Length: 439
Image (cartoon, rainbow, N blue to C red; front, side):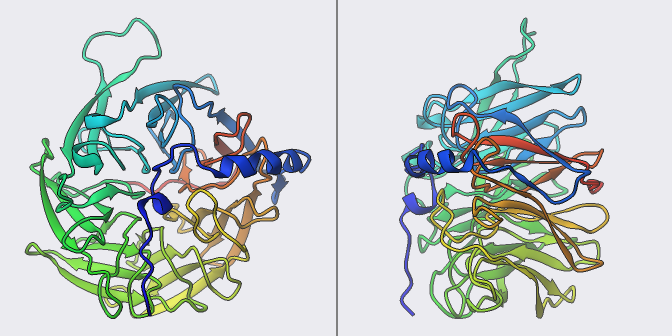
């Protein structure tokens, strides 16, 4: 089977303001008259921020991180100076105020962050930018408050570029949509969609802890069909208790429909194992989302395409330790494409699991109006619940987000488009009843 290798523009934000904005102007006129669907009366959907494409940013491609005080942190891949932003939504007396923490200037400081920022072991924010740095191949960075006292309650933070991906692409190019990950020793891990020995992406590690300025390429993806680690990893990686890494690829595998892979610690390079190779049939195809563990060690993930209803799938790999059996838990019914990424309508980011073992996520173009939805899957009962259908207007459109649960049972996420100005929103669904896992 001939493999189609996408251009960077297909998966990364070469053009900060998506061309789909043009189509959205007409779609929003039609959709504003549609009332957002609510599946459970006890739950309330609300928009807590409308992106303006100013200092707050535009087109958030990922979700939000929440701190102990209930403040939200996220990235927007465009807006600001045109190169994206990191923002904070400060919670005071039940209301949120946007605080632009950092506006990417492009160049050596980075540009177009596609993934969330997360708190590292030192309680400082860390993330990646898809472009900028050496040869425009992206950077890993940290953000922290300015050392001097700030007279204003809303103050920008300082960026430190920890690592700029090499201009020769040997260390990977274009950090993608997965969160950076820290192990118990403090080393940092993530993936790039391209670059490496075969220009098909890498899994990388940054050391030493506390500096994170030395890169080791743990695996370079081969890109060939067959039983290999695939190509175009996008969903980041997770760690097991033995230090092995797990992730997914959009392409590659026996049918070129993506794989779930395991990297066994050692080397470099680490030993790579394909746990499952997707067929493009009822199991689904093409994974932007990574995988997550449950408390028993089963793996869960999602595909953007195929499945019995052609809109992608939610799946489980079991039993723990061998992960030889794939079970499709749900098939989505969306059709067509997810406009921001020009991919399938299913989930574009990793699922989330609460402390009760329920799964949560979003689709980009499923739901009653085909502008995406927020869903819950109860593993105990096998029940799928549609929590909100985006109408494409003031409530938002085309979520690419993973979801975040707070300590009182509310869900948070973003949409890439829609909202008051058409540049996306941060949303909240209260009363869901989810409880975050304890780290």
